[in-house]
Image 1: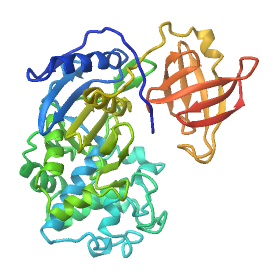
Image 2: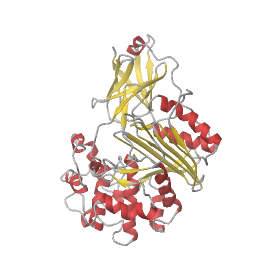
Image 3: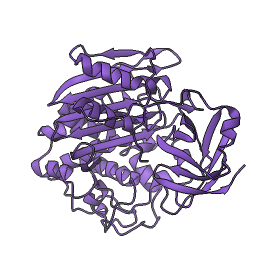
Image 4: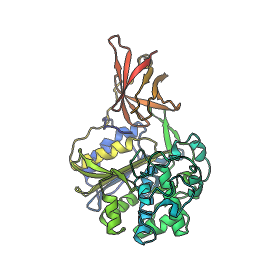
Length: 454
């Protein structure tokens, strides 16, 4: 979901391990900026800034394992969710560079059974314009995550389902199934399991020694962060356990902040891909492709390449600004979209551009005040969930958004009638009528009208 930067200045102690080479002023500013996120349980992890291929700031914060009080360090490895797609795309492009496959080959040349296999090209998969049904949207997806999977078993689950649109015609949403299918094609072309193939094609050549694909065989690996998720307004609890193999190709990579920055440098400034493959990644004619979003960013006044991800217990963000020769990596073992706001703000801070620190309401709202915020609000067909009804419910001292699926998102109070959805890091504002009753709800840049009030 989209979000805008927010603000707070609260002093708080935190666990931090940093580089001696970084600028004292940058370190102080970043530390001050991050304190409220740490204080409210919305960030724990690692931050890295690189300029001209050299690390100028790196520091780890919070706990990798809260139950055993193990701190995060720069050696801590985090699952990076959808940022994994960068490595799947690069592995496929390495095969293109060797001549064993082309971007215009069709899926049916390698995998049979998928709907549209004779229409969908490798390029369509890489640019998420395949039209394949999205496995993540299936009603039984939670059950899929509870069992070991392979690329073949994941693709078998979408067989026989119709395409959502004509391949190559548009980008509709993140295509998780497309990247499951790319993983299967990599396996078929290399004769290796996907984890081994990516290691041979990408991790070893680039020297990403702390990175890998989680195929459910690394439960006792060293320096792996444990994932956590929000509980109430400020609490945390261990994230639900999943089989990461169920996200093979689209969200199963783990890495460190240092390895991710090294990868960005190798991809954008190095020679890990051929000129034509590298140009395909850099091409901004399509906003989405090859595991990256890319556009002219008004905030920075230049082209920006970026990607974020969230999966149970983890959130991640990477930003590359080629004209500023700057990379920012934010990896967290807390399931919160705050990492995207953090990454953009830290980039602005480093480049001397405006940013707003995160600011909480000085006095938490009383239970009676929260009860005046409750109601049900109808949103339109262009909302994140089309025509959704969102309910604001008060439970004790906490206010929640209840989604149509039944999931609840805790709201962090910023000021009267202004909250932040803790799960999606979106602004939530209540509009009241002349009598003071809720009349509408602003969620991000969408507005819903009241359909019932307490």
